[in-house]
Image 1 (cartoon, rainbow, N blue to C red):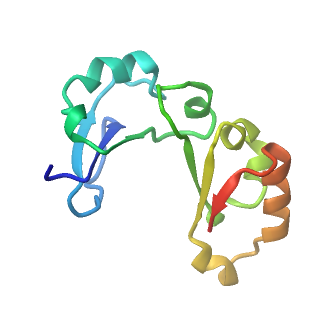
Image 2 (image 1 turned 120 degrees about the vertical axis):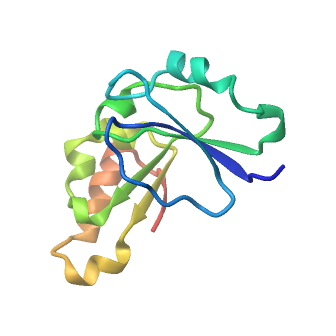
Length: 137
């Protein structure tokens, strides 16, 4: 297998070139302007993949914080990527996004010293949304 994993993502009508991990295959696909991916959309596109040759398939649903969290797409694991630049109140403001996650990846933590960001408050909101959710910072 040449590609360690493949990305299947909803592609907005206008999108710049996005950097991809070395060795990753990519199958961007338009889904008619919907704001989120659904299981039927995934089912319609997944036949293009050599699933028996793949170890991991990453389904990336970009967009707002609410829509993607409300719809299952047949995933085994749901990961929410959260940036500290969004503010510590996001788990309070959008609890379904964090409640539906199996893992929360907190990124841009290298910027914390430059932000007015209360990490303890964020972690409190996160625990209120989904107690004990695994997190990586």
